[in-house]
Length: 161
Image (tube, rainbow, N blue to C red):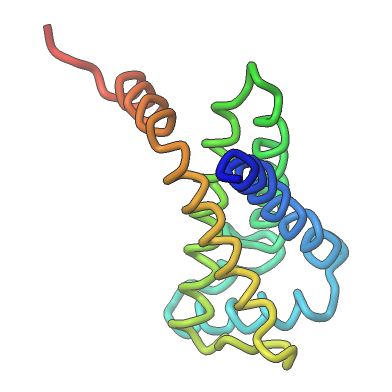
């Protein structure tokens, strides 16, 4: 029973996260009205703080940049099913956690709110579920994540000899 549950979690969580991310791309990459509303509100908020264009079409956090990051996270999560590339799933989980941390923060701490499209907060709930799924994947694979993280630190921070 535990083996079955473990397999379900290890396969189900990455598939769930990828499905949510990939489904959202049709809104972000086609400039859907829902996406225009969300990123328009965020850009107006950023402009009021002196950072106009931050969430605009060519901004640092545009719908295309966020959508591309979600596409990359999905690709990493799915490629991670190949045994030789399991580390990619850890990277995809970490990227997904970062993306959703930003999304949740913007929903909670900006005028965007938790129900920007009057959908009953479904978008916010999905963001929370994806965040929890990515965190769970990192906890489940914490040994491999620590090894990968230490390897990245060694690559970017030189050690003195």
